[in-house]
Amino acid sequence: RYIWFICFLMTLSGGAFASIGEITQAEGPSTITRDTGGEVEGTKGTGILSMDIIQTFKGTQHISFIDETELEVTSHSRVVIDEFLYDPANDLGTLSIKAGLGTVRYASGQIAKKYKQNVTIKTPTAVIGVRGTDFTMTVDETGSSMIILLPSCDGDGDCFVGEISVDSAAGQVILNQAFQVTVVETIQSPPLNPILLSIDEN
Image (cartoon, rainbow, N blue to C red; front, side, top):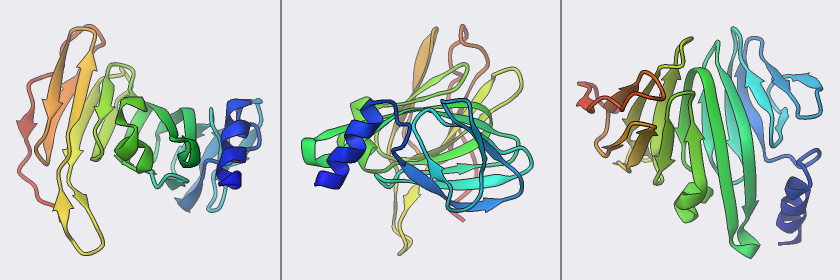
């Protein structure tokens, strides 16, 4: 209880020392730029802080957060951890992530399961509302964003499908079937009507 509370207070004070997760897998070169202006190499075991900017270049990363949220960041991607608060002892949780370029897979942790209204995932053209599920987002050089809803599967192979909303300034669509996909080309254009990809969990 006290450890969680200390982490929460340190995150509120700017997150300069409070690790909110770590890189659990890493291949190839990548960097993490801190809010203070410093830069560290994105290697396995490196701690993740609030306001970190993650750039993978030719590398890849798997990041595990303290609330069990998971991020898989592919090569040539850029992700910003805008905000992270997790204090289960005081019933608090907030998560905000921005994918600026490349492909990122998101898997919900405890924050999305308990405080889904406090989870915001953004791209340059879309805002994704999470209701406890997995999805990928791919952002190209123009900011156009493709979002695919994925099934959430456990170690026994049991899978379920959640739901996400995809919003732009011009409209919203809901994805609630595994492998539904939508594209948001600009912030002023509505998300395209979802289509269903012909693929399976494997």
